[in-house]
Amino acid sequence: MKLFLSSLGVPKQYEKKLLQMIGKTPSDVRIAFITTAANPYPKKMQAFTEKAKKLFDEWQATVTYVSLEDYRGRPEALEKILRQNDLIWLAGGNCYYLRYWMRESGFDQILPKLLADNVVVAGESAAAMVMGSTIKYAHDLQEPENGPEIIQDGLGVVDYNIVPHVDSPKHSKEMRKMADRLKHEGYKTLLLSDEEAIIAS
Image (cartoon, rainbow, N blue to C red; front, side, top):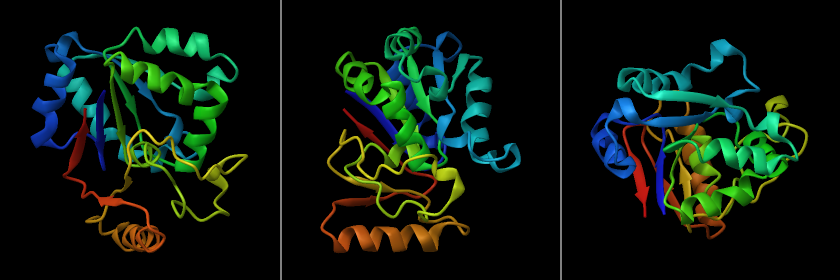
């Protein structure tokens, strides 16, 4: 398994490690950039995706943008396009919206196969959060961006739950509150600042 989980993009001190996981020079890397978690938000609010996009532009990597919404009931087609890439990058955004479309597209069934075959999978923010056992308390349940159905179970790829942005002036308070609630309920919880990442193998 080659799993890279971050709070925001690829922190500078982890860039070399990510490239080592991929095993290619930057300009040879092929990336499937899954935008789904960010899609329910207006473009002006999607600035959090720009850090990764800018880095991949600097690499001169080949980037294919993928929306899971386009693959409802088409897991074979989704798996085919994902396997044409060296890195699967899942952008941040809304956990519940992402989790719903992971199910509808079959991504949740494809992911274990990709990891078993040592395809590098990376998730930032919401996409890192869904890799744990739960995404309870990730958002207000009334947020319109949550999508048509709220699924609170995570994918269970890792045995801990990531809480990102704990040093962010904008999000720190709510993220730490979420972490406290999860810990109180007995969930193993790891807090990440925007300059930290976790590499699971």
